[in-house]
Length: 303
Image (tube, rainbow, N blue to C red):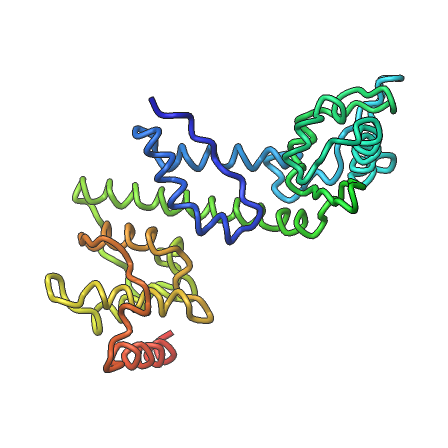
């Protein structure tokens, strides 16, 4: 029996994006009947834990509610911001160490040793810090040990980067859902044999994959510089031009390789395993590079 899959929280957008495919495969291994839409929904729920309101994906909680159990009022913002919250924990930690000098705390995970003491209601102060609030921010707290003089420090730089990253993560997930919806629509059209002819010279055509008139440029390259089906080198051509369009400034393709591959195979009734790395398909003669440059010139004169 397989264990429940815990979706990881990444503290940088780059780390999230590079691990997305492998995390989805691990999740699918546990839940084989799941869809990518289901996986995305679980990822969104995981990260929305950090928002005051999931529908306002710009506002992070930069303080926590600390319950003052003597008069049962909530103190927040001006009275107890996050710095003060960490100070409360610091005060409790130092008090515990003073009374238990043999205790060693090397990192934040080891605070679980004294969790009952530093969280919740405490005899040495009037505050009630809930575990859920502590758990939300504990990855940004660092333990400093100066000759057994332990203290907690909140890493504001790491938190700020995480704050920026999560906004980008939600934007990326929205694009992924758009791409999945487009793939479903293409599949329906293919099954019903009602696919409309591709509209050429349309700047916004397939803009869930392309930008800056990229589809028009790709179609030109496909018709003039990519080998026909069943001809050796076709998929190396596709991989090369994918990376050139993706890495170009301005960017002509803005989707990751697997999304582009799925889109291409569905629209053009083709099938291949993956987009190869650029260094695998550059070619010794440099013909592909020359063709790409001439294609860019063509687009300039045919906007």
